[in-house]
Amino acid sequence: AHHTVVDGALLEGGGQIIRNAMAIAALRAMPIHIADIRKGRSKPGLKAQHLEGVRLLHRLHGGYLRGASLDSTAIQFEPGPFAHPAPSSSSPAASSPSPSSSSSSSSSSSSASSTSSAAPSSSAPESSVAAAPRSSRRPDLVVDNQGAGSVTLLVQIVLPTLVFGSGPVTLQLKGGTNTAFAPQVDYTKHVFAPLAMRHLGIQMELDVRRRGFFPRGGGSVFFSAAPVKSLRAFELVERGEITGLCAHIFVGGKDGRKKAEEYSEMARSIVAENSPHGDVNWCTDIQTVENMKNENTCILITASSSTGCLLGASSLKDRKVMSTEAIKMAAMDMARQLSSPSCVDEHMQDQFIIWMGLAEGKSRIRTCALSLHTQTAIHYVTELLGAQFNVVGGGGGDDDVIIECTGVGFQNRYLE
Image 1 (tube, rainbow, N blue to C red):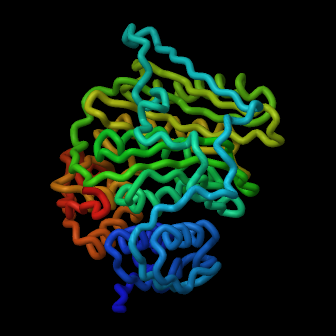
Image 2 (cartoon, rainbow, N blue to C red; image 1 turned 90 degrees about the vertical axis):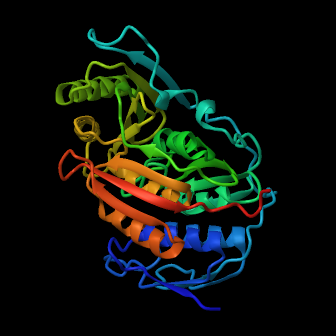
């Protein structure tokens, strides 16, 4: 078969090329050859999390796969049709979260805020952003990164296949839930998933059973998605009014709840002092695990708007960043975003590209200057899918742009 050749070293030259190229190839039943994988990295080739994503698509589509091994710098994939997996008999049934973990949410507002105590939509009950609830059942497949490889990057590579598959699928994803150089699971759950459902009609759910941090990993997420016939185009170009802010904070270790409350107040103060929206309602969503050996801390701050925009800023403690510094980084990031006219944050801009290309009609998003990840995504979604992109100024300076895309209107061949 003739293989479409993908240069894995082009532009950003990282794992995103693998994820987008493999996903589009699976949808189009298009044989591809990805060469020079991560060529410019200090350790080129496929790493564990890339390899598990590649193997996952092969498990769902069958066909021919060559070069799928650690450190491989080239793979060939000739995908077959989507085959709905049967529930794994060796997989554990879904269970309740560990009794050692606890969570709560609260809301507070400054004296200048509205008297309404309604939390922003990003902090709504999980059922409101999960239209395909299947995580109460045994998973269809278990995917294990064998370490701290990111589970959210597995979501990125497999979600297009599930959205255009033949029926709802539940996956148990094991690995890192909160790691560097990948979306935090909180971001995927509280920013990507609500935006995808509200504006694209994608039905998905993430149920975080256990957190996993670098270097041990060990996290467990039940991820469910249901198919649709097609995706609708959308626009996010007018932000409207900021209606609420929410801090989603996880702290593992002794006195976790007390620390989380202090971190929330620190974040609220920084955002209030450094942005024009410090007087809106502020809610706090706290999760703790007291018996963790180390103080693992991560934070996601979300901002909801009256027009359906949802911004996110996240950070986490690691070997080089202390907990308080992580809180400050996320808060300053959010303050910067609130001071701009962006409707889509810089972390979401590249994730939207493949979905804009698949949707039917013209989509438009207002965001900050294009990241290299976004430029790379636009290049390959144009080349492999045939979508048409245009980037124009938003009127607010160099850091204010509108990405326009005429999507191909991809249709699910498995649904009538």
